[in-house]
Length: 300
Picture 1 (tube, rainbow, N blue to C red):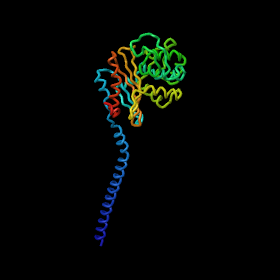
Picture 2 (picture 1 turned 90 degrees about the vertical axis):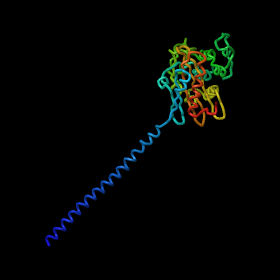
Picture 3 (picture 1 turned 180 degrees about the vertical axis):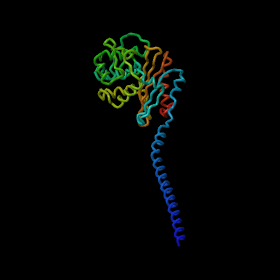
Picture 4 (picture 1 turned 30 degrees about the vertical axis):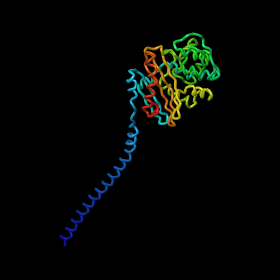
C-alpha cells in the first residue's frame, strides 16, 4: 500500500512540473506575440515616413551645365509645400536685384500716385542709350516689358528717398539698404547697396500673389497684370528679368510665378553672364526646369 501511494505521489509531482513548464512556455509565447504586435505598430510610422521621403527630384543643375554657365534656381511648389533647387548656397546669398526691382518700384509709384496708372506716358529725355527700345516716350506697362531703366529711375526720384525707404522697411525687402538720397535712382543696380537672396525673392513674390503687402489691391492687381509674360488656357506665367552689370561676372535674374493645374509655382533663377548672348539662358533654364516638373508640357 505504501509503495502504491509513493508511486502515485511521484506521478503527480511529475505532472505538476510538466504542467508548470507548459504553462510558462504558453505565457512566454503569448507575451512574444503581444510584444511583436506592439513593435510592429510602433514601426509603422517610421516606414510611412521613409516612403514620404522618397521623392525623385529632377537634376536642375544639368541645365546650367548644358549652357556652360554657373548659376542657381529655386522653385517653390506652394500646394505641396515642396522646394526644388540647384545651388542652395547661392539661393541664400544676397545679390543686387537689378531690374527685378521694377516690380517693387512699380508698386511704390502707383501707390504714391507718382504715376496714375500703367498707361500714363513719360517723355523721353532725348539721351540715346544702348538699347533702342529705351529711346522713346513710354509708359509703365511698356517700360516694364522693355526693362527701360531711365523710366523707373524717374519714378524712384519722384517717389523720393524717404518714401522709398519707408516702403522698403514695411515690406522688409532684402537687406533694406538703399544708401543715401543721392543713390535714389540706382541703389538697386549697385551690389554694395540693396541686396536680396533668391529665397527672399520667392517670399516677396508669395506675398505679392497673396496680396499680403502694404499696397492697395488696385496697385497689386495692376502690377500683377503687367508682369504677365505668357497666358494660355492652361497656364499664366508672370515674371521679370534683371541684369546686374556692376559685378564680374555680370549676374542675370529671372523671377516670377507660374499658375497651372490649380497651383502656383514660384521661381527665382540667377545666372553668371558675360555678354548679351547669355541673357536668353536665364529664361530657357527656368522653362526647362519647370518642364522637368511636368509643367509647360504643351510648349515645344
